[in-house]
Image 1 (cartoon, rainbow, N blue to C red):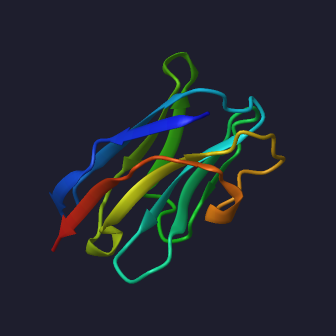
Image 2 (cartoon, rainbow, N blue to C red; image 1 turned 90 degrees about the horizontal axis):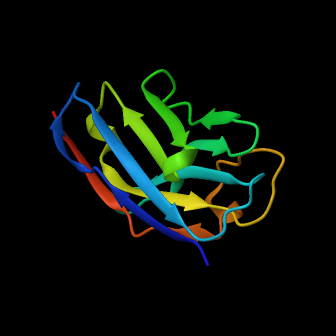
Length: 126
C-alpha cells in the first residue's frame, strides 16, 4: 500500500514562490507515474504536473507551464513541485498522487491515479 504525505503549502503574495514536497512509502511501480493535482472550492480536481518515474517524462497543465517544475529525488522517495510566479488563481488544495502500476505516459487525469495524499493548502493573495 502506498502512503503519500505532502508538505510545504502556505500563504504567499502574488509573484511569490513555494516548494511542495511529497514523501512516498510503499510500492510505487518503477515505470509508474507520480504527480501533483489541485482542487479549488467548487471546482473539479485537475492535473498540475506529472512525472513518469522510469523515463522522466514530464507533463504540465497549460496554466502552469513556465512557472511550475516537478522533480523527484529517488534516494529520498520524494516528489517536489517548485512553484514560482504564483497567481491568486493558483489558490487550491494541492494533492500528491501516484500509480502502483506501470504506465507509458504520465497522465494529467486524476482518474488514472490510485494513491493519494491528504493534501496541502496553497493560498495566493493579490
